[in-house]
Length: 248
Image (cartoon, rainbow, N blue to C red; front, side, top):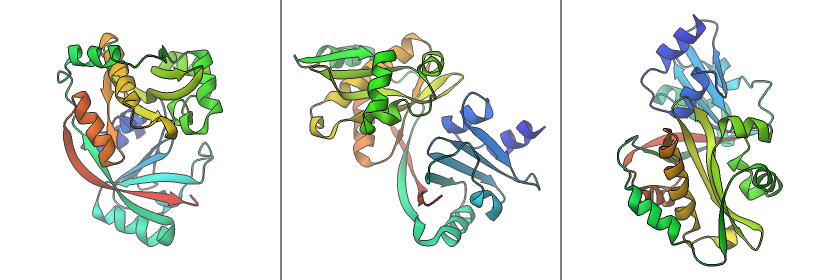
């Protein structure tokens, strides 16, 4: 019954992190006492649907250990509630939704991108040794942060990394997993940015998703991410409001 309530409240939201929660694969769903509002929370993201409820935006699940969260409101009323409650701790930001189009990718173009990886770099699948490298490098932690250990990542995750002389310099991985696909996370070490490495990683991960009949969903934090997505074959959908909350 609870699942049916949540599915109804989130029905209009085309967001894979919500799907992961509803499907019980990753994340959690929390419904208020009146059963007219719900929160879907996974990693750094929390989505709020239904009738705005202050108790729900104040509620922090025991599984959530961090003091930072990105809250995504379903409506202006939810947004106003978040601003009123969190005040200066709520930073209003724009994020960019990317269309979900399964047949849009030019696989030959993506294969050429992978083949054009410059000499001196090594492209590898994200396996146990690479999982540990991601854990050990703060900038790369989000590539695997939602998987408690490598066995969990091996079961649910999919990713690739680029090494330079044995050092991790870029990667693309599944931030989260739902039944028919993944949500892509791409990161590059700061001193290796603007070298095309994110493009290569993204191309390889998309190709692997297609081979495994998984959809590689993309949500952009900024316009640079939108540009990279479009270069890989995606199309921009719309801009939306989110709140970065400190002291959650």
